[in-house]
Length: 150
Figure 1 (tube, rainbow, N blue to C red):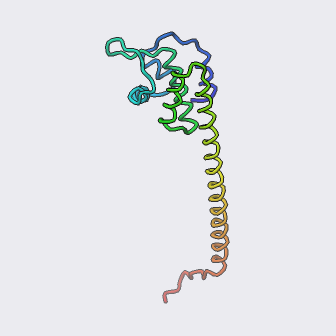
Figure 2 (cartoon, helix red, strand yellow):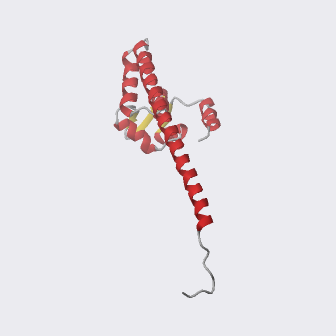
Figure 3 (cartoon, helix red, strand yellow):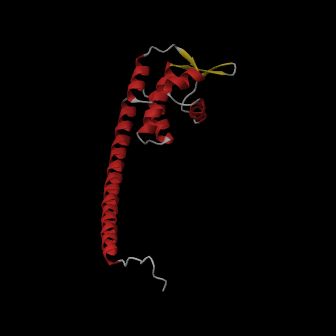
């Protein structure tokens, strides 16, 4: 979904309770994705019989999960963060934990960026050397004569 589509959905007033289909549609995920995160213990929708009902808390948690995944955090890290939210009403530990994980992620991405830049530099060099070699080989290649049957 486009960023504008996501912001348009965020502006829409949600009902207090959503079924799995409506929740999946609102979050732009599959129903299977919602069941996956439920199985991992990250969300716990209410049940009415066999029907899953998603309230604002679960939708909010899913938005945090999806953001965490988009930013490259593992399910374990996201679960730790969400668990802190429940036991830390002032959110001090949660924010402290988040700051540490964000700093670590920034450092990891910077290392990856340096490695990618180094790889690109090397690949560009190989590309140029290959082009130069081919250009040189074209000048030394003997054209085949059409009618010569050696």
